[in-house]
Length: 340
Picture (spheres, helix red, strand yellow):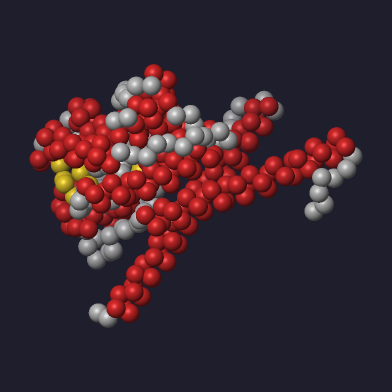
């Protein structure tokens, strides 16, 4: 392959990642607009005394591929990804969905408010209030009750011992890893910087963003073993991760997973390996090896996603607040603040 061909492929890949990140950012803000509309509708309904405003409980089944369906009729969690974030967890989540397992990735945690509320009330807030790193007592059944049969990414990955005790016969575990600890740290540091900036900017304006900001304080304090992070007010910048402590946390977590989870219940997996090891572990007969394995959520796409979501969010905010301000100004002064 010539250098020109290699450069062309890299450029094409970069464009694909930018488009993927932009699309995800738009989807996030579309969900926010829908959430805002639903909240407004419910508030109006309550004000009018209308009781039947719909069921807010989500039972997720997603866009599943029935051709390669894993039996997900069980009422408990069947697969839990126990790898740290930035080890291919998003790609794994997409793959599990394609195999028929409704999968919750933390990137979409806010889309099920009851689950985010559980984590906030049982884990994040108690640690922040006490300024102590603690694991709390999350209720894993809440996740299963919303139709999810698999989870990937943090914070669930940290609870592999409790999950194994809760589902000793039903659950399998997948430990995703990167090629090197250094590679993992560089990717995780970029994610932490991008997400913490986003949640800090919007944390005081949107309730679920405040919860996510609390989550990131708890998570980074846990990974970095630095309780001082818990004391940083939302809206203020977080201290940078300590590379040595973070890598020690990552490596010790992986070592402990290998030690605790029986070998026949654990798959140690790099998403570069593709479909076959995953299908073999989950006993999928019709493994879709002819289909490209999901590859997404790169560092570049994360940046594009963050920028897109914030630009779209503040655009919506301006479109809402400016007409309201204009209307209020006209009512008080008899003059228009601006002409449209």
